[in-house]
Length: 396
Image 1 (cartoon, rainbow, N blue to C red):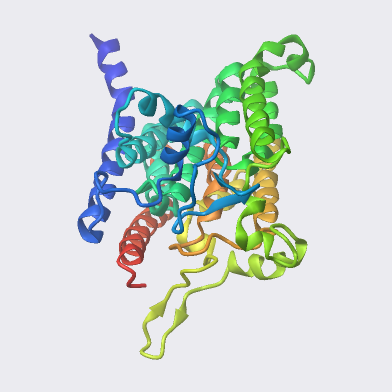
Image 2 (image 1 turned 90 degrees about the vertical axis):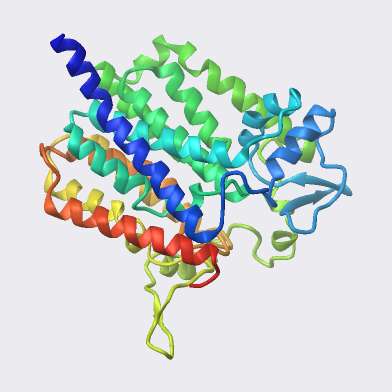
């Protein structure tokens, strides 16, 4: 009886986190007029899955409101393909893809996996729940998870898959770890930068060196198959195994410096830290194009950095690798011509949040949330709820 009660209690933090995420989404939908059942005008991934079903790699025609790659007089989805892989079975069966519900399920699953990762690193149940809420609802992830627009569903899935791969690495499940990581890369290509971190976690979890991967080549089998699919798809569409289409967007084909250039970094690095402006009436005016201060909109980064230095001796190697992963990804995204266009916050930085979560998981030693964590969580949730609603109402 006692074991049954203890086992039941282990699930409570996961249930609380999942319920909190659902409530946060309901609040946004209620005040912004959105709904998980609303039609999705930016449904590129569904269109791509339907084209695959019909035996075609291109969409057959252009859509003026979508970001499509124009190549060889044909129109292709210009984003990495994994979300279409998720949608394809439903499309094949003739079932309408409930994109909004899939986005909600992905977000809830992401929060639950955050909590599981924290608990796997010996974080107390209460702290694990609070940090998970800070990570999912008190960060810029909330903005991208409340609908299934083509740009946002990819980041939502990418976050959940990256956290899942980190959890599998901690639990020594190498095959799943690399497979889920490959799925995340198929949503957001710069997640490839997480590979050294995942390998390091697996080596430490298994108490082995680099020879671990020589003795377990099957761990890479699933990821290799998925990578082969990505490369075949890229080559079949664009004649280049590394080209998924973004370079053929008109905004980049017409750009003097191309899609990526270090010349973009100066302006974009400033976008990571710029604060909201004061309007002539004295009200705060938040930048909706190319991003605003990442620490303001995602205070989980503040929490992770503080914990990194406060608990520097424990798990130093993995936490340093996680910090390097964040820095490397930030440098990569700031070399991009844009920082995400219209948005609330700085959505490209959402891809770095799993590494920040890992630092917190490897550092938090308290049984109960510290006042600073509680304060950051309350601020993060309220700020992102308000900002997300106002942004979708176009009232920022």
